[in-house]
Length: 173
Ligand SMILES: [Zn+2]
Image (cartoon, rainbow, N blue to C red; front, side, top):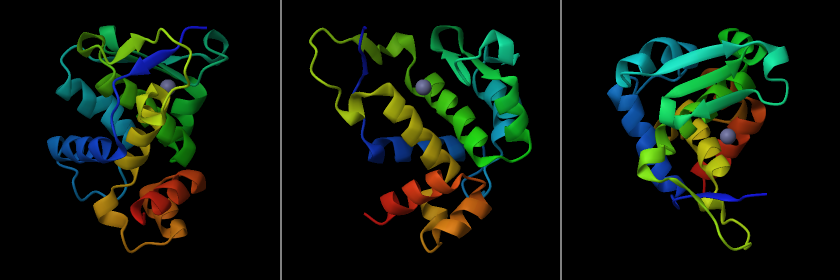
């Protein structure tokens, strides 16, 4: 199995980037980040040739989503997309995870490269970790939730309990 390593990037850097993304679309103070609207309306405005596809379950049974940075394309499986439109926190996170790959792992910037030796990935080098951090930070904006409990974050940001808990801990470190 090939290992892929993205350029190392810290949570702090990813957090700054998600703040910039919120700024770009005028959502700096939006508690409930409109994930589906972001995918359907905002991203096509930010990225000229961006396209998204909704894929039938039978065509992509093993993956909830897939991103092809070189084509500026995100594919979301229909059940995940459907749940996100209904406000499901986990599905909302999954869409933003794919957006993270799209925005951070552009092939041109050589964010992904083949790792030659077999040493384990450091977290900050792992594109999956990076995409998860991006999703959590964009969904749950640090500057908006500082005084909130995990349950408040979950409800007001439309996040899963697990994501709310993770961000809660990160903000208090
Ligand atoms: Zn991923």
